[in-house]
Length: 289
Ligand code: C2E
Ligand code: MG
Ligand code: MG
Ligand code: MG
Image (cartoon, rainbow, N blue to C red; front, side, top):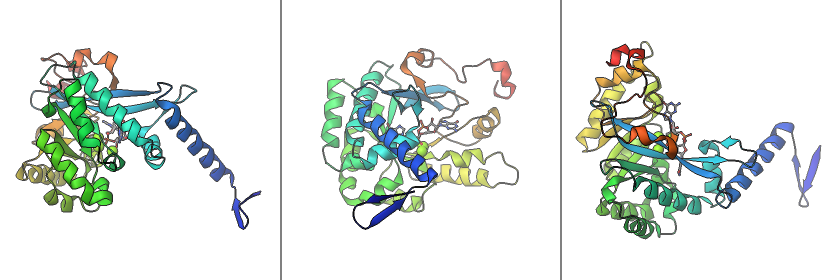
């Protein structure tokens, strides 16, 4: 079954392609209507200092629910939002919400926000962030921005100045998903980042027998520290992994084991200064006691 598109182009619709096109249209529609219909929400995942196991910050993670009440993963809708340009208004909303919400937290807790490359295109990002910090009387030192290296690959030059300006304000810059790209090291010495977030693929390999990920992790942590960066490990899911990380000198750890991304309504127990994670019966994890 073929449909004619234009005069000389025939696209052959296979069932798989058709499903993909319909899905893509659905996601795009959900993205475009999301803000107007209040379908976006921020969840927050705790970032833990491993020695004390106390919460020092939260990463803001965007959630989208479609008109049927079904949640769409950010790994699916963020690329769509980037393609259709909507990421700019959405990203602006994320920054505004994250700062507004974090302004209610105790002052020792920071918030980390993910940015997309396109948010640097217009050149208005730095000014906008200054405005938001002032409006909410929020200390720039409590704001962290997470950037993936693909951003630097695509937009190298114009982005550099903006990143530098953000750092001058006192905002921390974190390189997200470190180790997944092909030139991570190249970017590390070229730009000033305050933090490295090690991709969770390294963590999931950690406890596999005969795997050298432990040595690799050790080395990344050392490298980060040598370059005056803090190091975060993402994706700690099990007590075994949490245990293995006690020996590594990470500055922050993050993962389902310590806390999942949660709506604001569930954060209260995590905001109390003396809360030690995980918030589950200690006897379930004898190794950690
Ligand atoms: P990311 O920035 O690397 O965020 C970490 C992802 O790992 C989150 O997925 C989080 O839920 C997940 N995660 C955390 N701990 C664990 C664990 O122990 N096990 C496993 N399996 N996963 C864990 P999520 O929320 O689905 O977000 C996926 C990606 O979407 C993010 O990766 C980020 O790149 C992007 N994203 C999310 N929110 C935003 C946003 O507001 N703006 C932009 N530009 N991108 C966002
Ligand atoms: Mg992130
Ligand atoms: Mg990450
Ligand atoms: Mg990621």
